[in-house]
Length: 183
Image (cartoon, rainbow, N blue to C red; front, side, top):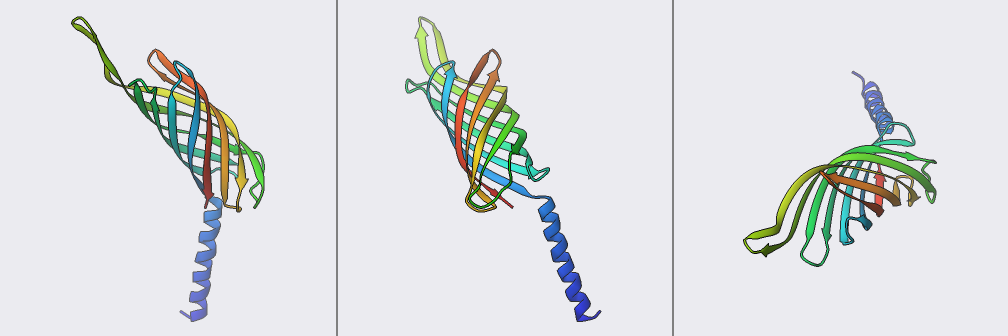
């Protein structure tokens, strides 16, 4: 085989892989949040969200998310929740350096909740301790992507969320702030 044919094959493979990567673009996000919890009680909360997205079109992204949530009321009651889920995100514009692009998103997931409360005894009967429960969650919201480059944005999202565990539902508003990289 001639050297020029090898060079053409190598360049073709590189061009083909670049074209395939452009067609199969992904995005990865990490965000933290401030919760404005409305029920059942107020508490100090923190959340970290890791999100992997797969572009279906230049504006529509299918997402898989992993969330870790921690809460403490300062009186000995604390909880930790891990949720895994999926959803979609739709950009209402196109990426460009220094652009501000609004988006909407929504998703559903399954959650594992672990909580502990102080043990209180009244006579021989005690209440409190640790519990674990599984549940269902959903969220929806809108946000802005501030593009630092065509592939990296700082994002702010305001979301309504609801997590149900048996007869207990925790819902509220959440402000997520994070960064997203596209590749």
